[in-house]
Length: 115
Image 1 (tube, rainbow, N blue to C red):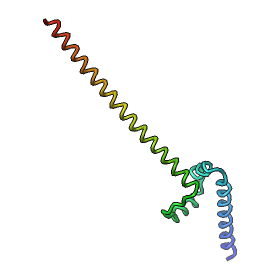
Image 2 (image 1 turned 60 degrees about the horizontal axis):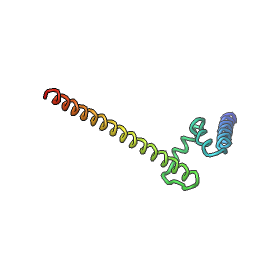
Image 3 (image 1 turned 90 degrees about the horizontal axis):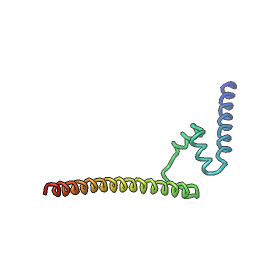
């Protein structure tokens, strides 16, 4: 009936307005877009996007920048991890070497006092 059609039309119009608000919100810069999607993204639109997702990656400027930034970040994290592990190994080896040298000095001093 007319009421049911009116409710359907009102629902579609409200949905259209939500999409227009999202469109206005993502007309800013790249990082503003990402922040908006994370913080205030329209869940209905995000779900529909995920349902329609394909594995083909468009190589536009935003995709290349995101991939490059993520790669640099991952490389820096891996290098930091390796550097910390190397530092810990050096510290452990130097403390072991000090203990070994100290025990040798102690044994030499004991033999000197005995003779």
